[in-house]
Structure formats: structure tokens, C-alpha cells
Image (cartoon, rainbow, N blue to C red; front, side, top):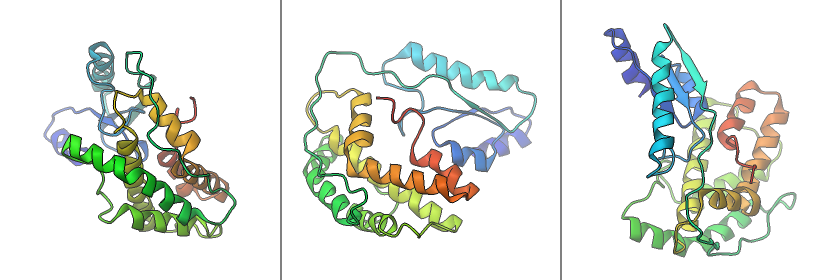
Length: 236
């Protein structure tokens, strides 16, 4: 989208857009973009909430008043909960979290094994999946992430390594979220988020990486923490 925006702007057509990954947009420097904290695949928030979606669209269109770019603004609202009184119960009990025990790989693989049947059910119901950007099995990704976590002295040092890590985490998160939401009913998004960040091994792994990257002093790694742990992830 950033490349399309540049092309249109060069032809004299003003553009604006919505970003779900702030660091990518910041690096690409498109003319005008609005960053939102919503889940991937939901750039306007929750389906059916026309009033909320209208506010997002108007905020993005308001950036057209900026005479020149790059402009990157943060949308002030987080995605609201779905309406309804359904009580959501996670379909699995997650294994003990792995911090400090030197067994990240096995803990992540155990969690994936527990979620695998629910992910299969989710994929059957939806007829599609958002898992696959890394181009390999999630078990392989878990082993790769576990090896990184089990070596505290090892930090990604190149753009290629950071890109690989980003794709690894994107697939593992998508797998986790699709599996959890396979439970019958319509779980509130905040509860799905709480399970990821407060109870799962994957959430603990990303928080551990965030702390390591933040303490490294490397500007690129510290900037990457925004991809690791989005704003509002730990509010619930």
C-alpha cells in the first residue's frame, strides 16, 4: 500500500491509509497513514460496529488536510469488546510458562500440540487460515523461537533476522488466536488477548523477548518491541 501511495502522490493524487503494524509504516514512510491497535485483518475494528468504523475512516481521511508528509498518526481508541453476554471458556489449559527454566522450545511445542485440534477445527469452519507467512510448520517456528529464547546472549543482528522473527511470531500468534476462537460461541476479543498475554507460553515468550530487546540498547531492537507487544496488550 505504501508503494501505491507513492505512485498516486507522484501523479498528484493525495492518499491516506490505515496501518496495523506501526514499525513497518514508519520504516516505509508513506505520505499519510493512521496507525490503529486493532487485530490483524480488522483495520476498521469490529464487524458490525458502524459508528466505530466511521470514526476510524474519518480520522484517516482527516490526514488529507496535511499539506505534505510523511505523516503517521496514532488512532486514540482501542478496539471495543463484542456485544453480548456469552461467557468464553478457553478450550485448553495451557502448560506451565517457561520463563527461567531453559526449556522454551519444548514448552512452546507442548502448547502447540494442545492447540492443534482446535486450530484444525477453526480452519475447517472458516475454510481458510492466516497462518503461513513464514512458509514453514508452526512446530518448526516454535523450535526456532525456543532456540533464540534459550540463548539469552543471542540477539537478532540483521534486518533479515528481524524479518524472519517477525514472520515467525506472526504465524505463531495467528495459530494461537485461530485455535482459541474455535471454541463454540463468539468470545470477546479482550478475553482472547488476555489468554495470549497472561496465560500462554507464547505470550510469555514475546514478553521475554521484549524485555531483552529493550535492555539491549540497540535502537532497532528497541523499536521492534512495538511489534512484539502492541499497545494495550497487558491492560486486561
